[in-house]
Every structure is written in structure tokens, then in C-alpha cells.
Length: 565
Image (cartoon, rainbow, N blue to C red; front, side, top):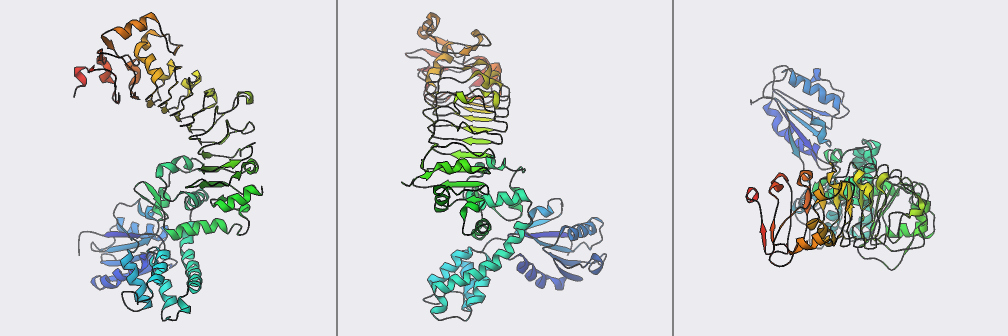
């Protein structure tokens, strides 16, 4: 053997078979080396016991800690091992070896259904397939194990030699599941306990609420914690991202939910998280909520006739995460927790935020398709959103007025798509120095926005698609002719009417110098009628990401030669 020392990292979730795989490889390969050692976690064996300078050795470090890892890597750096040496490391934490250059990663996968059937049947029946009459029970066990070898092997050990109907009854299998669950959870819980507090909280949120959700959905929620991303949970094999969706092994999810439920098995109001309709209904109907409730997420596929009593929310003073989708309510919302970091309330049924509410810690506010007419009642005075980054009010058809934006210090995204009654934006929006995304699509009655908004250096995406009234303003009132402090508003001036009759109109959608970082989208603007030609300004080529999309009402559009490719 040659080619230099090689390090292989066998990683995967607890119970997936890393140690078993390492033992098989060790038994098969050890005769080919000058010496071989298999070191388990907790073994205090130092390198003096296995290091043979210049010799080719096979070393397996099973679930080792960082001390042993540093020791091994130091011997490699100092060229103390033979060039044909092989080091195998098993770990649940893929990130453990990220700082080391010379290593290969092998990720142990869950068993396929065929492999799982074969493993279980070999343990129970000493053959590769189920005995006739046991197929349904076998499928039930495999559905629970979900490809995890540890659970399958434990079930196989408990059922080996059992053939009577009573031993395979539903009640017996339930008891066996409890035994297996205890063993498996003990293994899985180990990784959870190694996490920091914030990552434990994120893990529990994901296990309870967000399996199957888009990863982008979680980004706003992460701002509730002192962490940047969830890569650490992926590295520790606690979750995966598949097709941009969050996935977690069923037994890990069950472990997370069990941790929460054990906080108070009989009293849901004393648990930190609520996700079950019946539990939430009991808490809100009886108004028994306590300060221990930190998060509520309820997403109903079909809205039920039964309504939740909303008053109970006013007394959940420690609530930090609130998500409702397709849920009906009764009563008056008097307040919300001042500790809230994230709110997503589809079809929010009230006309504004509660007057007593103070959004000191709120980072994201999502009220899609709501009944809101204004963010807060103007008689409540000005509210300060110190930490708000994202506000989504899209589809709120009764929204008529946006507030003064002076209190929105770090707002980055504002989505007002489909707010058909909104006619203007407060001029203070141009002072939101962090604003990157502004969606005004299909705000059909919008007639005025601050001219200074277009010189906002942070703004990257502005969507004005379907703003028909506003499109009229842009066509015939070039920004160059408007005083700096004015808003762009509709006008029926004689000059504008004259321009409508002209046969060639240069499109001054806005001063192109100001558009270097913009994506502008104007769908179906009523630019002109008849046979008038449209000529884009020649300096439009200086805009790297400009999009004029769809259905221009003109028979000919003249594009500058510089843009035609």
C-alpha cells in the first residue's frame, strides 16, 4: 500500500450503523497492516500504545473526541506514520473534520425498504423474507423504524423465536415499540444534549413545526436566535435538506416532540411549544396559558368550523413564535406578547395590531391575505420596530394606508403585492436605508410614491407590475422634470395629453443613472394606444438587470442597437 496516509470519516445519525461498518472494515483489512488498533470513545489509550513510527497501521477511532482527533492529526502532520497507513473515524458530527485537509467522507445512508425487510426477517425468522401471515406486522415495524438499523435490530431481537398470535398482537407490538423507543431515544438524545442552548431550541422548533417546509421559510425564524444558520444541525446528522426542504428522520422528530411533551405530559399550557389543534384549543378555550408557552404553530389543511378564543393570546407573555394558517378565531385581540420575534398569521382577522402591543423584538411580520386596514391605529401614536427586517402584507385587500416608516430602522423587505386599495406610500419609506426589496405588484390604485425612493442605494428589487395608474405617471412625467422633493402623481396636463397623441415617445420610466442596482418589472402598463412607436433610451444598456415584461400595448417597440444582443 502506498499513496500516503488516508483518513476516512464515516458519519451519520446515531443508530445508523457507523460502528458496525467500521468493525467489518477493520476485521477485513487488519491482516494487511503492520499493526491495527480499534479505539472506542472513553478509551484513554494514548498514541504511545498504537504509534509505530514508519509502520503502516490501521487505526479506527470510534466516536472519538477532539482530543484524540488532534493527537492523530499531529502524527500525520509530523510524518510519523507509514505512507500506507489508514485511519477510520466514526462520528455523528461531520463538521468535526472540516478543519483538516486530508480526509474523505463516507455518509452512511438509511436502509432501503428491501434491505430493511431482509435485516428484520433475518433477525426474526432466520430468512430474507417474511413468513406468510406476518407481512402486515413486519410492514408496521419497518414503518416505525424508517430505515434505521438500530431500531430494526432491536425489534428483531425482541421478536426472535416468537410465533404465537398473542406475541404478535397489536398491543404486544405497542409494548415492544416502547422498549425499542427507550433504547433508540437514549442513543439519539446524546447528540441533542451536546448542542448549545440556542441550537437545542432550533432543533425542537424544527422537530415540532417545520418538517417538510422550504429552507427559505426557516431563515426569518433563525433571526430569533443567536445563530447564523442550521449547518451545525446538518453536520451532526440531526436533519437534512432535500430538494430545498427540511427533512428529519421520524425517530428524531419523535424524540424532539417527546422532549417537549415531557415538560408537562398532562398540562399542555405548561409546555414550551404547542402544535396540536386539540392541545391549543384546550389552552385557549379555558384561558389557562402560562408564561411557559413560547411558540404556537397551527397550520390546518381545512379550516374547521370550531373557532379558537383569541383572548388567551393576550396573556401569553413569553410567546416568541406565532404561526397561524387557515385558522378561525372569535373574540377581541387585546394584546400580543412583547417577546414575539416572528409572527406569521394568514388571514389575520383584525384591522390593525393591538394598540397595547409593543414590537420591541419582532424581526418578521407576515399578515398575508389579512383584514388589516392599517398596521396600527394612528391614535395609538408611533410604534418603533427596532429589529423588523421583513414585513409581508400581500393580498391585504383592505389596506389603505402604510405608516410613517421612521420607526423601521433596519427594514429590508416590504411585500405589498395585491393591496388594491393602497394609493400611496409615506415619504419616509425613502429613509429606510436597509431596504432591498419592495413589491408593489398589482397595487392597482397606487398613484404616488416618493421620488427619493429611486435614489435609495440599498434598493435592489422593485416590482411595479400591474400598477396601472402609476404606470401612466411614469410614461408621461419623466423624473428629470419633477422637483427633487415632489412625489410622482397623476396628472392630466395639456402637455401629457399632447404626448399621448405623439407618434414616437421616449420611455423615461425613471432616470437610468439611478437604476444600476434595480430590477424593474412593469407588466401590461397602458403605455399608449394606436400605432405609436416606443423607443427605449439609449442609456438603458447601463442597467444590468432591467426587465420590461409582457403585453406592451403598442404595435412596435424600438430597442437601442446596443441592447439587441
